[in-house]
Amino acid sequence: MQRPVAASTWVARPSRSSRPPTILVQVIRTASLTDLPVLRDIERAAGEPFRALDMATIADDEPPTIGELTEFQRAGRAWVWVDGADHPAAYVLTDVIDGYAHIEQVSVHPGHSRRGVGSALMDHVAQWGAARDLAGLTLTTFANVPWNAPYYERLGFRVLADDELSPGLREIRANEAGRGLDAWPRVAMRRTRARPGGHGGVRRI
Image (cartoon, rainbow, N blue to C red; front, side):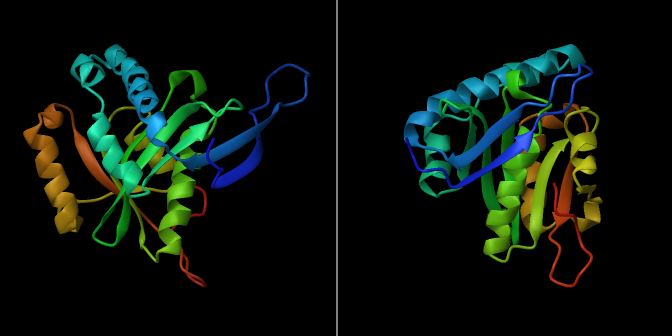
């Protein structure tokens, strides 16, 4: 088992019962080569909810190949959230695009959704980017899927107008359109990192 690169404790959302909240251990670590097949399974599971939105094409889309995942893993830009048995239940892939840490993919297994796992992974990327003096986070996503753009807006991202897109984001959007993803509205989003003494962004993303 790899040594965790980040760990913290957090409290699960309180239930309506009188039982005390559950204290969970949250561990985010760098993905290992042996994790990569599991990441493909997570991606397939995370795609299933799209069927309810008549987006079966997205649900059926193949996950990144082992080769593609290996490139992120070897570059140190793939992280996993693991359970108490060190089994990955969510992951994030990151690139650097035009001075921002770009969220290439973030996926959470449905069995671990609505627990703050996705935002914790993005917090981790934000810290990674800040350590490298990157200006913040960017991503592209579906505009009208509840757990896509509306969710990211709640985490401090904002939708970029076409004339705000950097060259790298324009290229990403063009590639997505070429793959047919624009059959449903898509947007690019950005969250700017707060600078010392400044007012940009928020800490929790």
